[in-house]
Image (cartoon, rainbow, N blue to C red; front, side, top):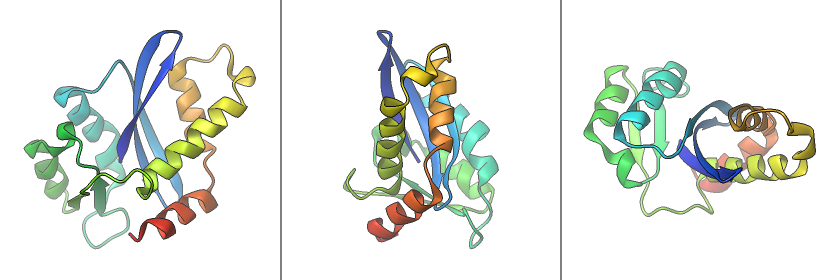
Length: 146
């Protein structure tokens, strides 16, 4: 999981994606940027419900080392459901599975820009997230050594 920043109509939007070998399982989009409270709310509302206790499927949260991600409450919330958090260092966007997914998402948005007119940025990002194929997701994880 990591977040994506986009500019649309002069406004900044941030998306927090939940990415697995099946592709994006969720996208939490907010106006502006994430702060600690908004980030933890997104974790509670959009990430934890997809996780299962270790060693089950979706029982490990891989997260980059962005400062906002290293809040103590994050580990506590994930561990409370029996899952694990692994903080990735150093940050390597070329090999993080979700960054590969975000590149595919952005490519899809650029390619389909005209057909998305009239949809909010939130709807556009959620739609684009559903269009990242299972094959692209599996390849992203295979290339990342996770």
